[in-house]
Length: 457
Ligand code: GAF
Image 1 (cartoon, protein in one colour):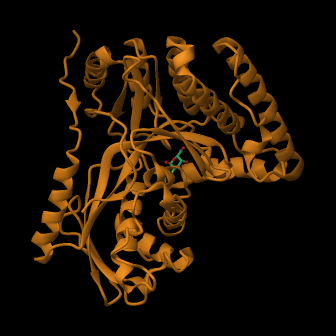
Image 2 (cartoon, protein in one colour; image 1 turned 135 degrees about the vertical axis):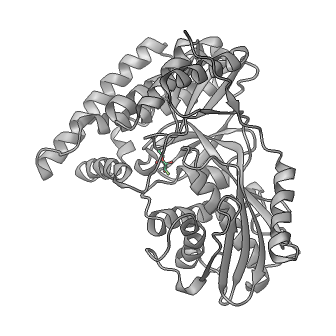
Image 3 (cartoon, protein in one colour; image 1 turned 135 degrees about the horizontal axis):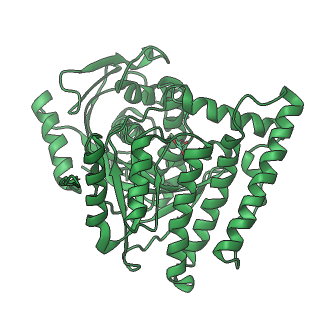
């Protein structure tokens, strides 16, 4: 007999309510108003995994789920922070004494940003001497869900520290728009701030991740997906008008652990970087032709062309490694995956940009690209797990156009492209299957595109 399970739906956060909540939490803790509240989103990566650090293009979308930081300036060089998700775990550090390796847990991401701002920020980002801050943090980004909760924490902290330090910073005017101002004129500053956050994550938190999450969190355009070319971090916003197409994203937090600061992520990154070096390239992306859109080809032709190209490029890369270092000690599939995903993102960009002319076929093919990417992550890159595989296959068996794991893998979130009117029934099917198999309950997260990090108050 089929076991029936009520799907657990998360609620879309009420942004204003969240800002007020963290402001009030700050007042409750410190007995005074914060100087401001800042927030930054997590991201749903539609396509392109493990390729940001290789100069590939990725296609993320900002989530409506954000991390909120209420803060007040101090002038004694001390950084003090607490999080509503970590009651009783208040942390304090002297900013000038922060060192990689000296911190533990969630606070690494907060203090790491302060450290990194001082390492490479330049005058308009480095924190003034004696600058300190009190922070209260509240996050609505599911932690460990592959939805970039770390970047949301880093980026909201970075904006908060940047604005809070303005009164102590030479040439910074608190009457002009603050440094965090979200106009396109500030994109260059935000791009630098993203680099600061990436460095904090790599060097202080010890997670050897690329720049996908921080770039999305700081530089997204409201309501849009982004295509980011990681050779130069240039971006183009793209419209993913699912609603007009009668479609929606079903986002499932499988509540299985996803952790990137261990070795599994780093060894895959190192393997592909070894190929880049062996081919004497700046970016592994440059081993492929410049144009990967397969414009004018139908789905079948594009797929055949892609698979051929991926095989040839993988052979070239592994032969180059072999000549220099002997037989590669990593699986061929790790490299096949990265070439494959590089191709998929550029085909998907072409489909989205031309969805009007291409009609329903564009969406059908997009769904197939999602699933192709998933199969590659499962079989080639080997970063899936049973619960993820089951969520993906259940979505597809129940009519989804495509489904895939999101982010670095090993656990976390799954997304599916589904007909709008089948959103609930697909969620029900996944909840039932999980209950039958005795897995932890999944959570279904309503999805609309969010907006970049911002000052909210
Ligand atoms: C994580 C990393 F932080 C990103 O840089 C990216 O590599 C992603 O995994 C995989 O695509 O989110």
